[in-house]
Image 1: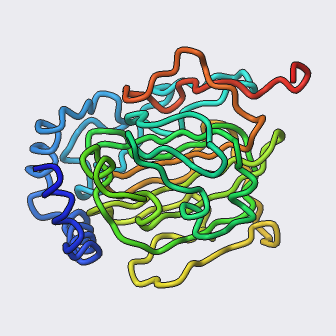
Image 2 (image 1 turned 45 degrees about the horizontal axis):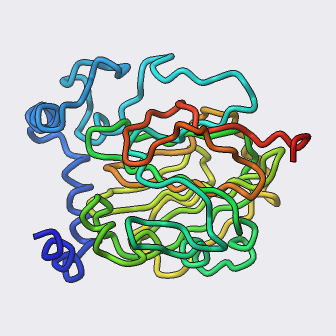
Length: 288
């Protein structure tokens, strides 16, 4: 059945379905019933949210991108600690072997494909490290900075919108490099860090906190790049600050330049993780 589910997705009208769901999510019709059913089905913990009253949400989408209460996700003030950018499941983490990243068991994809064919950028992350966090429907859907950084550029890459759950990641080759995605390249004081927000089936939009950022456009057919080093508005974000959010869920991949991140020894893949939890530490250059 899992292979059948994956095969069916090849012929589904991904963008039409996503637009349709996006319209419904922005509507007010039966929104209290929909939110209530969603909370019960996915066991959403609304006690963490700034607003715990479902009637107060303008529509389903407002509920889905809800903010959390202050200090619900504590951020370490230790500048050497690198944190998870999102709530979800840590589906993969480790070394980038040359330019190859693991997608699932026996499935790999290349950083060149993931970054839209930008070989120069991909070369920066050769033998670096990466983490992949899958955001399920029940999760908090805002994405945050794993460490302090300055935005250098964004790359919006159009593509398909396959589901990104366990079934499809185990059966559809090159999944994350097929789907539409927004690449955000940041300069840190120890090297480059790249956050890739990957779209998926019924994801209405990917939004960034900076007003001049590229937001997802279903009509886009070409790769779109914006250079922020030449923009009048500079985007500097502290560790834990919000980068953007998904309007319905998806996946975040973070690439770290070689020599930047040293993973915690007890980090475990295929386990839940919360935004703000430690992934590891900035490498101490004095010991290398």
